[in-house]
Length: 297
Image (tube, rainbow, N blue to C red; front, side, top):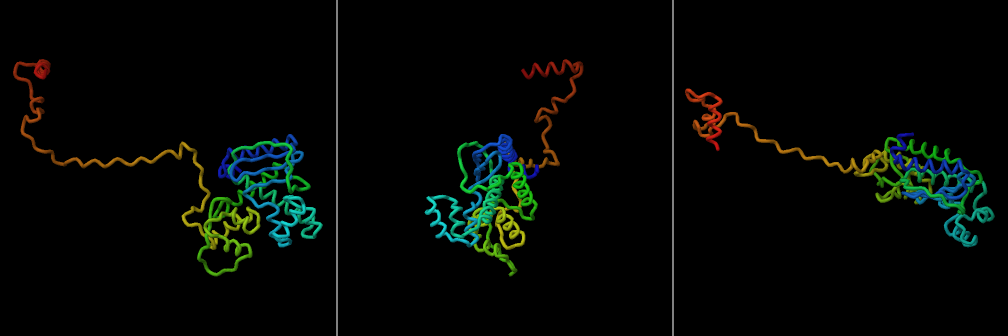
């Protein structure tokens, strides 16, 4: 668990886990809004998470449109008939576009995927808001601790892959590779990968969960279907600012080698011979150095 926290940013992970735990213990009803990148919101009822949404993960509407039970034009018509409701569940069931059980499954998938996207990003702060209602809640909520454990398990699984990637980090390109069979999802990702889209962007494009797409992108990178030129295949280590500010010093230039033969001088030219000359007869060494000092002055 500590490896996951270090990879994501320990302060942000702990802040989010603590805020959700407090909501659960207080049986909070309302919204826990998370600022950061991508950020998002958890909607709670009596301490249980009944919905989660994030710009980093497709919502239930995107996931439902992927099932081909309803197209975008009919979806827009149902939204208008429902007075602009973002999740016209009753109209979907009444028109036969989806069953009640299918809608519950889609809402649970969207909740867990949004929680993963929020936990995988940068968490700057958490704010409690009362009086808000989610547009696509689940009937039975998730315990905050269990929801965070599920997100941490997914993050650990991603980090253990041969080519770990982040939902909003790598921007893969199709790689020239031998013709091998691809799954329908892999074929879609290969079609839309253009070097500008991240796994999060691809998830919205193909209408799949961001965790599912991120795992598939990691596998395709490891198998050679995709490539990320110039991008390391590891999760970067986030160094503190004081470490990042340290610059490597250039080594000093080498000193020229000392000559092996000393230059020849005339005797007495530098004063060395005179200074080391013995005192004249009748003069002690103490008197000799006193005389030298007076002469110098």
